[in-house]
Image (tube, rainbow, N blue to C red):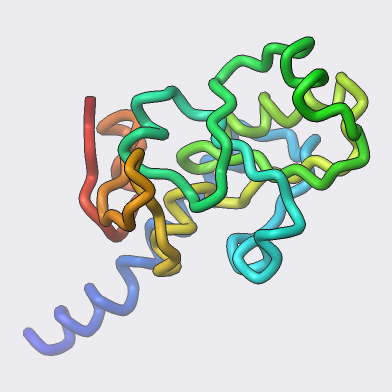
Length: 162
């Protein structure tokens, strides 16, 4: 019986977190920004401008390599000046994909035509075993979890709260 419980915990519990992310995204997102999977982004990282749409303190704890911190709110004129090519392929992410959808919608309103929301965002990225780096550009196991409520959706790594 004890062996069954151990096997159940290590086999099923990671799936429960993913199911929860699915439910949260269905609840809060309208899918106006198409999703891209972490696997697809990982294979093709160099073809996308990757934008971290979290708070700066979250970004400093860890972020996806080559990601650019963009803040939670889009500064339309500054962004358009920095990235004038509206056909550029852009991936936005946050903790699980809710805040990034809002940011992606703002980019679409500015005329950017190839904007994608990273499904499960940095939590899913980390849970898949992909590298995250800190503000010193060094690999880290730490991930800022935004809040205690969101923390349950991260299955791996060190959960950081500020």
